[in-house]
Image 1 (cartoon, helix red, strand yellow):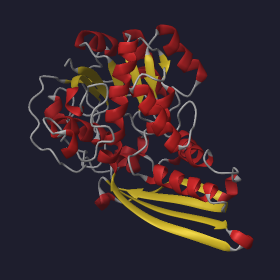
Image 2 (tube, rainbow, N blue to C red; image 1 turned 90 degrees about the vertical axis):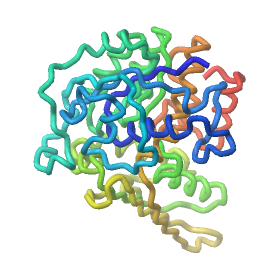
Image 3 (cartoon, one colour; image 1 turned 120 degrees about the vertical axis):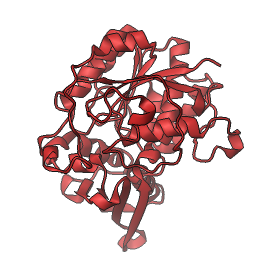
Image 4 (tube, rainbow, N blue to C red; image 1 turned 180 degrees about the vertical axis):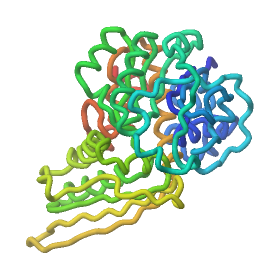
Amino acid sequence: MEKIKIAIMGLGNCASSLIQGIHYYKNKDPEDAIGLMHPVIGNYTASDIEVVAAFDIDQRKVGKDVSEAIFAKPNCTHVFCPEIPEMGVKVSMGKVLDGVAPHMSNYDDDYTFVVSGEEQSDIVEVLKESGAEMLVNYLPVGSEEAVRFYAQCALDAGVAFINCMPVFIVSDPEWSKKFEEKGIPAIGDDIKAQIGATITHRTLANLFRERGVKVERTYQLNTGGNTDFLNMLNRDRLDSKKESKTEAVQSVLAERLPDSDIHIGPSDYVPFQKDNKLCFLRMEGKTFGDVPMNIELRLSVEDSPNSAGCVIDAIRCCKLALQRGIGGQLTSISAYTMKHPPEQFIDEQAYNMVNEFIEGKRER
């Protein structure tokens, strides 16, 4: 079986979990592959993915082999596969742009980014020479300019684009048209977790709707100790993130809530939590006879492995699109794995759509 060749932008915790997973599931039988939503997609297993290029801006990662870089500071995610063989792929220096928030310089090096002095690499040339088929974007929240830069690099290099961050590319008609015109698949925007705050909130919202309970107010508060949460202390970088998370829930409610009755977003940075994310969720509503009720939930998850379980499906579905000559936004896998896809569907419907796509019964 040929490999699925990917390039990764941003070798942080999410990339570390993804790469660990590629090796962790090697030679595992489908029945033993705990944690995979689809052990096999189009004959491709998780271990059929190969990283052929990588970009970062941190001096502790640039120039290092990917197998070493994914364990370098400030990464702090759970290590479930420590033995990663050397890949022979060196991390190339990326373009900083707005990828590093100014306030990050106020924190200890172990928790923040240390920008390398290396000369920026030719991103498009590296992508072409590596033979990468797709670029997976893991840039920090708020990197609006940088994400658009890398999306254009993917177009210029002729590689597919999987946008795991809340900068709207695939759900933006103008950008989506660019990928369609070039015949290049695109999946996005803003990765969901397997069992995370957004998918849990959506599931409860859908339950209220299906059981005839009127939702009147809801909030979702999150804390964590990774660089993502540190980065998001700068509230000016959060507009697209809040929109992405809020719309993911609003889209499954029977009636949209006014802004004053719904609050969804990051809450605070707690360093000792590291990559553990805590979600505190509350929903208030009225049942039969206008009788009030509420539900409160506390969710604790390792943030980055939780997202990798979805990305590993997105990568393999993207490969199927490449094989089938499909360009532009991939509706089904975007709706299934992303918070802000081009078109929202309830999760059960998105799951069925993805299975139809995998089986070749659905074009996108």
